[in-house]
Image (cartoon, rainbow, N blue to C red; front, side, top):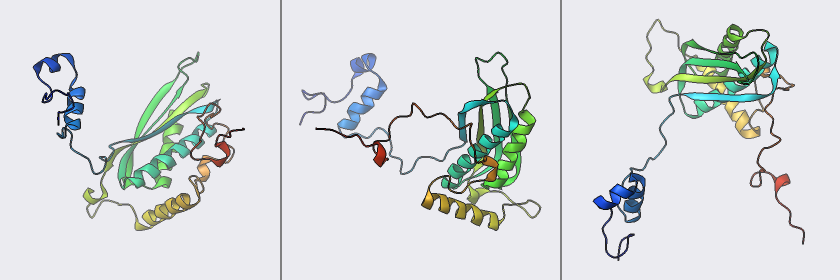
Length: 222
């Protein structure tokens, strides 16, 4: 049987490489049964985890910024535990709209006392970072939380003088994740996120959820 080129040609030659990309060459070789890229049983673990969104309304006080940053910290921690990783540093930033008359943008990195995946500890650090970044007189549009310096718990270095994450904390986080997995994301959350979330991102232009929501399944009238 002829290969994908037809006419008995065997893959790329020098002429083809001068006129086509390496991606096309690899595609041709793969279609001809020649492996060019190794298969990955699982994607590599991320080195950083970020959670950031623009607010539904600009914040002119610190309280809504603390609430939304607490939410982002929780979501980032959920991803962290799902990947079975711990973190040692958190990066927090806030900024105004780039089109605002008074623009402001700043970030800060905070080192945690020990490698952790505890939402409560990370949220507390994120809130402290926001308090150090916040300036009155600006309308904040966006904030974000980044978990950096991630490590595998199996390779965490420790000694007799270093504090480590308590086992009780690990069990609490496992229970929290189990509740949210069973009853839906956000069922159990920190009070620091607030109840009336006026800052929530606007979703008036979100794509319809035809495959995941009964109420949005298209109807055909004949």
